[in-house]
Image (cartoon, rainbow, N blue to C red; front, side):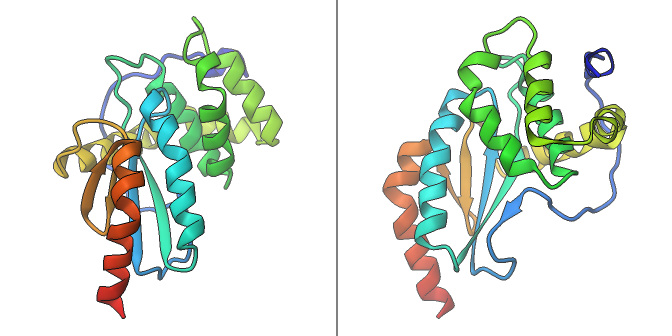
Length: 193
């Protein structure tokens, strides 16, 4: 497994077909939509996980959270690799579990010379099908999807992570999310009622 997974992930773009977003939680018809542009190696993104989850719990029937990859590759050399593994975990309906493991263990894997054995350990912990995962990692559509999400963020003027859009209103960082998120959501819910 590690030999196949250690194949270097290279930059490139290809077109992809529309797909069901496997990185969303909450009611599909929720009136409030949080789009989270994040990088698994970004410490600030790790700090945003808690306020996002608090908002989701506070407004559980009214909010859906969608994760979009925005790896910042220059400062975070393992961000794209982590995003690739997470996207492939999504293909097996384990995105959020893998997301949590990546952020919970960020201090360990992000500082190691080679995080692949740690990622493989996470895969095994979640009971993912390793053959399916290897195939997903090697498939060009996986990287294309990550690049597409990054491009969508750039078109929305995302410049840093985490950037969270609440029904189109941008907030940057955990502090802004904590301070302004609940008020924006309440205003959006008033508009919908």
